[in-house]
Image (cartoon, rainbow, N blue to C red):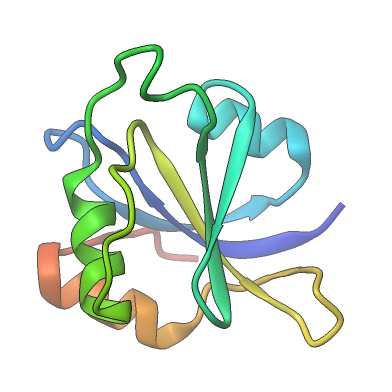
Length: 116
């Protein structure tokens, strides 16, 4: 199990996006996205979402799409359902979400950050 700082962006715009420390294991990730996970890579970060989000008719995650578009300049897909952004360690394991991605999310739509 790996404890990491994650950026969690709910699809529901009424729920705040947030930064929190999670156990980045499969069970936790599946719970956060509400089903089996699909990974989308973006350089030194990646995010997980429900692999059946479109089929299940989950809400489009506008904030996640905006973040990906601003960070990469490309929006290759519609992302449906909640997303969990993480970083990567040098050896490819789950790592803390990069600080610049957190800062960009804060600028774009604001974040709820739990205090430790």
